[in-house]
Image 1 (tube, rainbow, N blue to C red):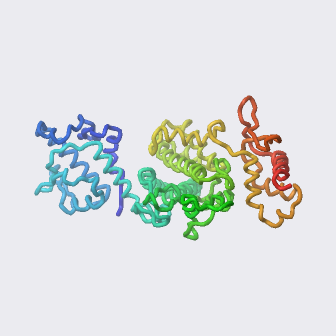
Image 2: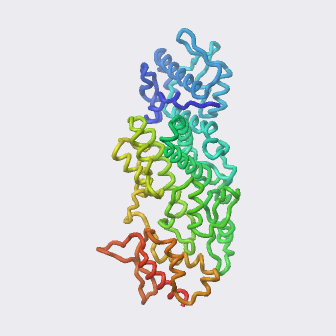
Image 3: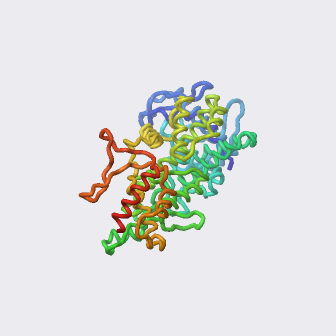
Length: 466
C-alpha cells in the first residue's frame, strides 16, 4: 500500500491547538480553529450553517485520507465529494478505533451528513495512527522488520509514539536523495544509511517496552534475567556477580555481555559505523548492579543522532539550504557524540528550527548530552577504567604470569584507553580509596595521556595483585 502522508499536511496545524478546538476550513489555506467543543449537548444550539461547515471539514479530511492511502471509492462531481461504503470500510480497517466512523454519517448519496464538529483531538489521533500505519510501507527500508506493534525479535513492544513518524521521514529522505548524483552525494547517501540503521536499532531492539510486566526485559541490552530472578528470590550465592546480556542480531539470540569494548565494536557494525564512547557512561562492568545507565547513554545519543539528523534535513530543505547541509555532512564529526554536537551547532548557525519529535525538556536534555558538559555529565574515573580492564584480562594466562607491572600490561591499557576522556583521581593511602582530583574546587576531566596510564596502571596493579 503506497502511503502519502503529505496529503494530511493541511490538518497538521491542529496539533498545536487545545484538544477541544473545533476545525473549520480556511479558504484555500487549510483549516482554522473555530471555538471549542462543548460536548454532546452542544448540538442543541448548532445552526445549519455550523453543521454545513462541520460537514465540509470532515469531507476534506476523508478526501485527504483517501489520498494518503490511495483508496478507491471516492468521487467528485460538480464540487461535491462522495464516498462509498467500501471506502469507509477500508479506512476503518486501517485506522481502527481512532477513526470513529460513526461521527461522519455517510448518507445514501455517499455524502458526510453528521454535522458534528471535528476536534483537534480527533485530528491528532488520526494523524498519529496514519503515521504509525505508514511503517507498513517503509519498514522494509528500515532493517526489513515486520511493521507490527509487537516485536518478533525480543518479545517487546515498540515505542511507536517516539519513533514511528521518523520511520516515515527516513523513507521519504531516501527517496529524495536517491535521485541525487551518486558521484557528488555518495557521502549523503552513506550518512543517512547510518541514520536508518541507527533508527532500526532504536525502534526495533534497544529502546522497547515490556509487553508483559512480568516478562523478561525485551531490550537488546539488559540485565541477565536468570540473575535478576535469583536476586528477587534471594537465592544468590556468595561470589555471584551481576551479569548482563545483549541481543546479537546476527545470531538471533541474547548473548553474555563480556565487556563494553566488545559491545562498542558491535554497535559500530550494527549502526553502520560511528564510535560511541561507552566509557563515558556511568557504568562499570565489574561493579554496576544494573545495565540501565549504559543503555540510557546509548539510547540518548542515538536518539539525538537520528532525530536531529532527520529534522535538520527537512529544516534545511525548507530553508533552501540543503547544499549547505550536504557540505556539512562531508565532515560530520569523528565519533557519534561529536556528530551530535556538530549537528546541534549547524542548526544554531544556519537554521531557526526546533525539535519536531520531542518536548522542549527532552530536546534540551539530549543536546546537553551532545555537548558533554563535564559538570553535568558523569565521566568515568580513570582508576575504574583500568580496574575494569584488569577484571577482563585477569584470567588470561599471560596476565596471571606477571609478577610486576611491565610494558606488556601497559600496552594493553594504552591500546584501549589512550586519549579517552576520564575523571582524573588520586589515591588516598590511608583509606586505600581513589578520590577525585580537584582544581579550583572542580573535578579534573581530560583525555588520558601515556603518563596517566603508566602512573595509574602501575599503582592499581601493585595495590591489587602484589
